[in-house]
Image (cartoon, rainbow, N blue to C red; front, side, top):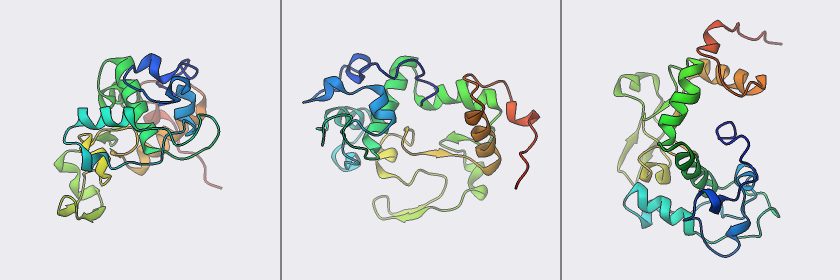
Length: 193
């Protein structure tokens, strides 16, 4: 998300996402969301209180802050969900499409995506026997809120493998803002200590 919103970290969230409303939220910036210092609570059971992705996103926008922005660091799924909405609004498409087009595709990350196809199932470990859905989950996001968001959110739902993760990490650490096409296929593996 940081790469997708480069240059917008000081923008207020409500400027980019007018539905993000409530006491104290006018001062919440993209940087606050990225650093988990927005004041949003860590979590809220969106999946229990909504029935669609649209409803869940709208609810995330209106959850009250727990603290004044910038005063406390709390990992917040809600903050990542709000960031998902910002990315989708800025780019005009769902975050899985944005990431595929701007990051995964150019880096050649062929084993990284949301909503993996059934053919990947043998490569994916089961994650849990989910009482909410009443089945063992395999190749399906286990986070209930991400499931309510159709399996596509900035806080959960992304599937990958070690090779792609290594390539993504190398790109992230390289300081290069825009990934070069299929960069990990040409780059040698780093030497292990």
